[in-house]
Amino acid sequence: MQDRTINNALLALHRQIAQGDGAGLEHVLALMAMRGLSKPR
Image 1 (tube, one colour):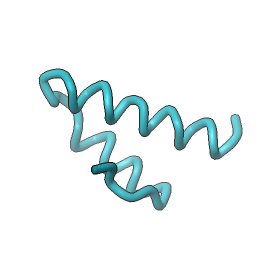
Image 2 (spheres, rainbow, N blue to C red; image 1 turned 180 degrees about the vertical axis):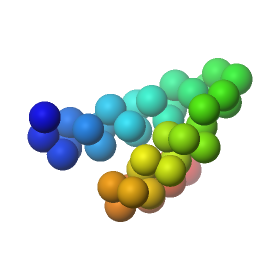
Image 3 (cartoon, rainbow, N blue to C red; image 1 turned 180 degrees about the horizontal axis):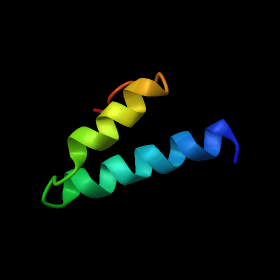
Image 4 (cartoon, helix red, strand yellow; image 1 turned 90 degrees about the horizontal axis):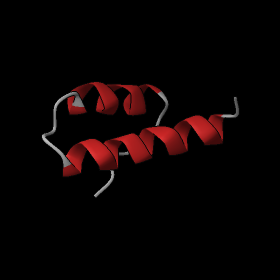
């Protein structure tokens, strides 16, 4: 799997969780940080 695909999947997951109940958001943010992605606005 390409890095770009993984990054896009993490961003989409962040968006979905943030719009929901927020459960697991800290885990997604940790994975994003490990990959060097900044927190979306």
